[in-house]
Length: 374
Image 1: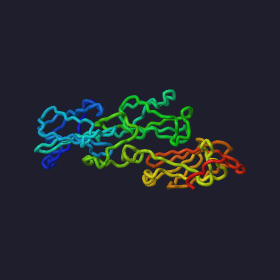
Image 2: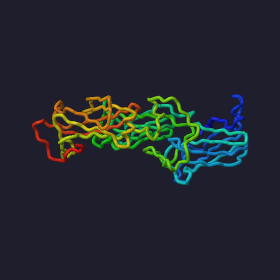
Image 3: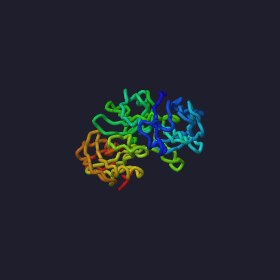
Image 4: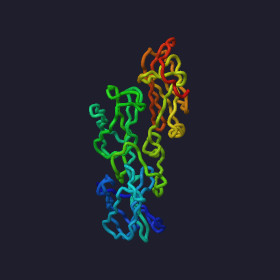
């Protein structure tokens, strides 16, 4: 890894009162790691290397994407010169941390003061474009290329139509070529999209800080050490003015997309193919998973509806649960698919799709299960 310049923080009253041009009591320089990724299951570890200007006690701390410290190691009385501290991908209780991206901080303390090397707030968080994004139908993979390590959100939708599924949701990926597996289904498992010529994968990516370490296999979901098993919040976290379109500023544990639901309400039944048999005015109950509801409502959202991939209606005053009434008499008899998109004002999305069989109002529906949610 290339040599990284650090952020030196002064830690004593004497240092704080000195002129701006003075050096801190301890200078941490030439900070680098011998690798960027480790697999603790294979007994791999990373060495964080650095140069000290004066003898000091040095602490290496490692924190996750929530800025929760999961590991600390202090080494007393390190002499001036080139030094290193290792980390084996385990938390402070000796357990392997979940596969994820972590960041490290060095803090040096001497009798004259202290300094820290922390790039978390100085680097990363920049939106980048993924290159060569494409669906490889033969391999069942969505391929793309990243110029820099980043957190990635990969969504699928129909060109000029609805968003239909999130494949990976703000997971960390190193620079280089990537291939994400996808089964060809939408979020509800109703539609087979693999052969749809209008299918479009969309990758959003924000760069990771330069002090990032990857642990374990590339995760499919964001993962954390349980908060009760962490040590503290990282010190020195900066609070930049919030930009609503900057997803990197959202807390990582609430940044992801949501699980939406769309269910016909009333005396409707399902046929043997699982299609809701409907006619006339069809009320649909719109909601999200219990774990997502408070976040969605607080951040505000709009509900957008599509029939057969074509925009049909939009409700900009979102509340949950809510009911949308669809007039199926305006559509030809036969099979249709109705899609809900939850669009949060801060970029959180949700999708749900149901298949329906529209019949004329004077035709009795087939036998089957009654609609739930009545």
